[in-house]
Amino acid sequence: MKIHGPNHANLNPYQKQIQKQQEAKQTKHNQEDQVEISNKAKQLQNKENPIANRQNYVNDIKQQVEAGEYQINTQEAAKKILNFWKK
Image (cartoon, rainbow, N blue to C red; front, side):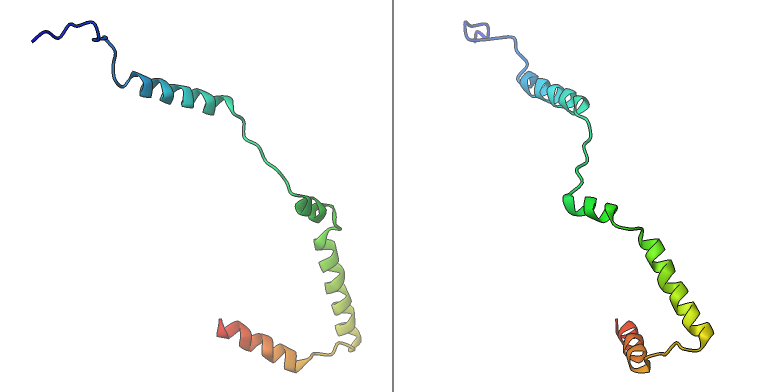
């Protein structure tokens, strides 16, 4: 049997696959990471500092406690405690 015919080429059958893998690696190295921030996230960043708002809320409660004017809603507190332990 003759194996050297006109249709026989000395090609590696996996050569195309190897080339595709190398091209894919090169394109991955050429790409840069990107981050997109949504409009909603931008709006949240531009809002007032939530820590300052929380600090003002805490200071108001402290003043009420010191003045003896702070009233605790016992029903609401009990509901929240029960909901916490039901989870």
